[in-house]
Length: 257
Image (cartoon, rainbow, N blue to C red; front, side):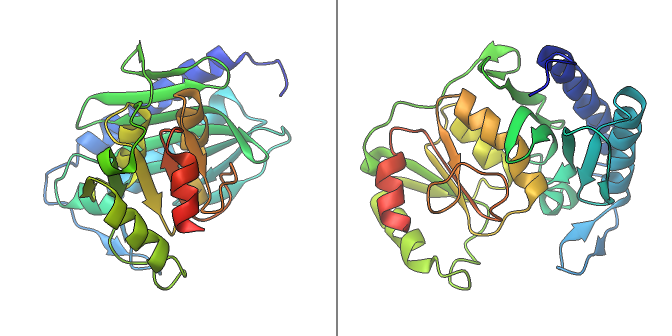
């Protein structure tokens, strides 16, 4: 990756951008906000749109040559090899129901790799972030995945209990359910944050979007864990994902492949 601008400068920008976008979402949170359904039946609100507009405005002002990919307004090509991938509200279903497990996601990527990742949870006052080669942090303090090494002691998380059969993953999912200690749907991005901070061991999604994945490759890897597709490849472009604490990675892959 190019040495200019420095990664720490980009991280500081990403943290500020996520915080400012998060403040916009809080203005609508638990307000009985209306929503529309997009083509895939997922909800979108004025908070999603204003949050992404804020992120795009800040990126365009500070890094006008960088590309941008966002959930609500698509791709904006730049001249730099660097791309900001943004999700203004990850977990909009939670958001519209007044559940605080939603986030603002910001990542700086190059090709198939994320160099900076920020997951900000405005309603929880939590932020998990990482820079490639510099570790993962949770509200400013270094954080790590758990050291659980037995599937029978592991906590398994998912965004939903549906979607596995249609993607040919039902048997693998059931094996994970049967072999783990606790199973919960503390999902969307918060599940990945829980794995990165040692509060769970495995998080799976049979269907993902690029803006969901982008921050968590660097976050999980810098926390000592893994973020891969269901075949074990580290990628943000697979439209599916599995996060583990690293220790259980091989066992998880044996069950889902």
